[in-house]
Length: 315
Image 1 (cartoon, rainbow, N blue to C red):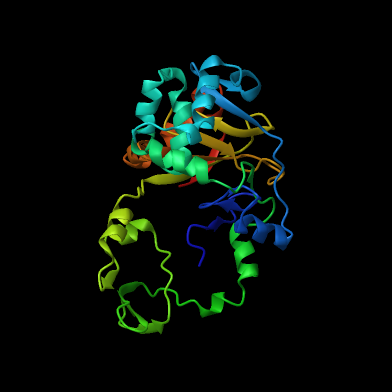
Image 2 (image 1 turned 45 degrees about the horizontal axis):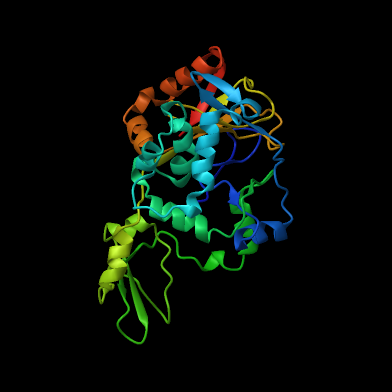
């Protein structure tokens, strides 16, 4: 159980999230579930750093940069967009967003949503910005995994889950819904909620009788599911400022964050990189050169310390 939630233990002195990590907004069932558990949130009094013109600048500096101000304006007014459904990359070009901040724009807008600027549409971004009601603050757990919250809240349900039983057929044409598993077992129910990845449906890994409505199939096929990865890097000691939150770079990794910041780790010597879309595809092809390449990029920003202090990684 857990789906997109999976903790990594034993890598450092705190639990690292390999999947979903942040709670986006306080006005949500998810946040309420965590709050009701009594779990502590990590401190959020942190500073971000962004690579501009080949060097890192702190948020105290880059937030007053005219190009960053323009970029922030494009993001803050997404709900006002009323033009054609062009890509976010085309939107940046139309607005003549300078090249020196386009990697930052990609990190904040597209990579955050699991893709690249040229693969996400303005109509969808506008609709999301308009309908979003969960709040703008993000939260991370301080001393336990997200999975542990669910394991406590749903303790009575977990023993009823049939693991390693992929469903391959769903017959929903009769008075009951009949599910057939890969091993031939069948299950009957009044209703079925399907929570598989959109990619499972797009690849027709589940057959439906009768077929799903044409409009439903069309909707499924219009939803993007791009490549993505997390790279967790461990160092013998921290070489970034103690108050570091996120680090935005122009290299393969649009955004790193200091994974142990905010009191999550006594050592605070781990960085997590989130890479999605085209950059994830390119990085994946590097295979054994993946981590050395990222270390070299970090070393260029931190006076060679990344390569000198590197200990371990998890991809």
